[in-house]
Amino acid sequence: MNLIDIGDSILISRLESLAKAERELLAKVLHHLREVERRRLFAELGYKSLHDFATKHLAYSDDQAYRRIAAMRLLKEVPEIEQKITSGEISLSHISLAQNLFNQERKYSGKIFSKEQKQEIFSQISTKPIREAERITASMASQHIPAKPDQIRIVTEEKVELKFQASRSLQDKIEKLKGLLAHKKPNIQLGELFEQLCDIGLKQLDPGKVATSRKQCGINKNSNAEVRREIFRNAGNKCQNCGSTHALQIDHIHPKAKGGLDTKENLRVLCRNCNQRAAIKEFGVGKMELYLKV
Figure 1 (spheres, rainbow, N blue to C red):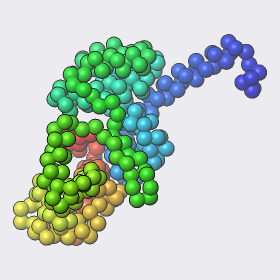
Figure 2: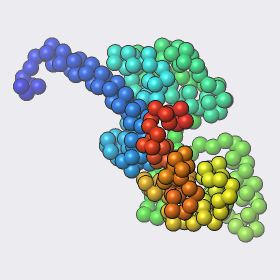
Figure 3: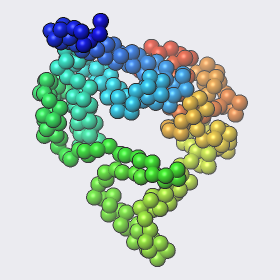
Figure 4: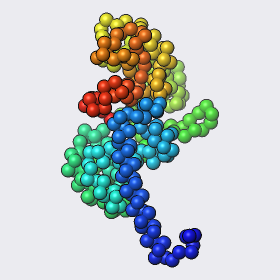
C-alpha cells in the first residue's frame, strides 16, 4: 500500500513500530561490533582498525562509525544503558557526548569515571534534547573540552588544510622554534615548520632506520639490530597484512611460545591489531583476551 493512501493514525502507529525496531536493531549491531572487535576480525579482513572496517566494509560514514563504536564500548562497561537505547531514552548522540566527557577528563585531568558515576551521568541526560545534554555534560567538565575534533580538508591535489586545537604551551614552543629559525627562515609558515619537525621525528623513530626497542619487537637481546631494520625496510615500513603504518611491531610467524626462532625467515611486520589477531588465531580468543586492550 502506498503511504499516501493510509490514514494518519495508522501512519503514526507504523512509524512508532519501525522506530522501536530500529532501536532494537541498533543494540544488536553494537553487540556484533563488540564481538568483531573481541576477535579482531577486522584485522583478518585486512582492515587497519574497527573504525576502518566500519567505514569501508559496513559503509558507515566517519561520524556514524565513531558513534557506534563509542556506544559499543560503553555498552560493554555499562550494560544498563542497553535498555535506555532500546527504549529511546538515550541516542547515539547522547552516548557520544558522554564518551567525549569521559575521554577528555581522563586526558586532561586524569579523572577516571566509575561505572556508578557513568550511570548517574546517563540518568541526567536521558530523554533530554541534545542541546540540553550538551549543556549538562559541559558543566561537568573540570577543564575546557575542545569543541571540535581535528579536521583535515583537501585544498588541492598537493595540499590539505589542517585544523586542531592546542594548548598555550604549544603556542609558546612554536614561537620559540620560529625564533631559533629566524636567521635562516625569518618568515617560516606553520606548515613548513611542522613538516621540518615531522622529518626530524621520522628520522629518529622510523623503524626502518633506527633499531626498534626489544620490548616493541618481542625479540631477544641477541638479535641483530640490522636484521630488524632490514625486516622493516623489506615491509616498506607498513603492516604486511593490512598496510597500516600505526603501532608497528615485529611478529614471529611461528610463535616463540611454540618454538619459533628469531630468524629473518620467521619474522614479519604487523600492526598491533593484526599482531593481536594472529595471536588469537594461534591461541584462541579466550586465552588472549586477558592480554588484549582496546
